[in-house]
Amino acid sequence: MPKAATPALAPPRQKGAPRGGAAAIVLRGVVTIAIIGLAWEAVVTAAGIQPYYLPRLSAILAAIVALPDAYLAGFLRTLSETLLGYAAGALVGVANGVLFHRSRLLRETIFPLFVISQTIPVIAFGAVVVLWFGNTILAKALIAFYLTFFPVTVNTLNGLEAVDRRQVDLLRSFGATSRQLLFRLLLPSALPQIFVALRLACTLSLLGAIAGEWFGDTTGLGVLLLQAMYNEQFVALWAAILMAGLLGTSFYGLVAWVEHKAVFWRSEL
Image (cartoon, rainbow, N blue to C red; front, top):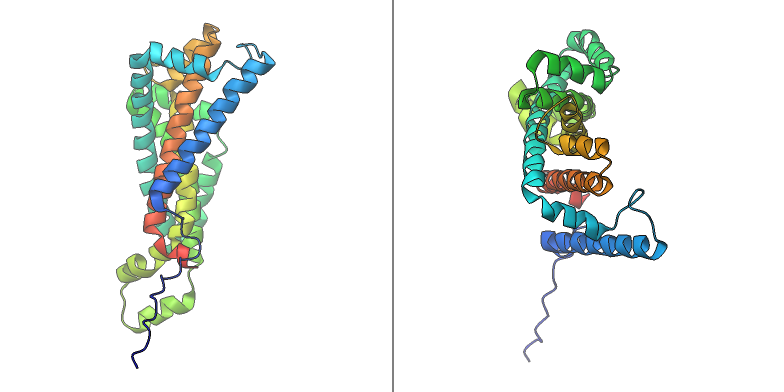
């Protein structure tokens, strides 16, 4: 007598894996933003809050639509400054972490200087940079770099130092070179720590770029913020804040997506 066919069982979902994939995550984000926007509009209207304190969201969006070229140009300018500083800070930070991990002498002599450099207010550092390089994209990118490289350096070093020494000894027993150890064990193991700093650096690089624009420029979200503040245009001020928030949130989401793809094994833990 033939045996009844056993129904195939779907493989269990990995612990921590997102339900529905990237599309579902994006959809949930859009729905959340829509709910917040509706609540914003309703509360401001119902409570009669004056635009001096908080304008209606519809008024802010209308201000952006009324001057799309200005806000788009400012968005793209600040984005370019942020990306340049972020990329340079990430590369230099990872390289610093590797060098400090390999050389105790460098870690004890150079790393304290990095710590001291972070005690300098960004406004003071930005003023010096603008005096050196003028009101250029390079100057703004350097300020973004200044705020970015240190947390990446620290987390890269911490991640490398946390690698299990037994794994290192095992690979060395199989004849692995220092280069192979770095790219096949050390850096992959340190990626979770590195990405924590990279996500933090998203907002820091954006803050650096906007702060740099405050020293004088003609285009950028920082320029729009200053112009609206000096002219007491409260709706325009909130419009620039909203554009900066959009830039920072999108950048953070992109880095988080890259982390999900690069550090794929974390969903299995």
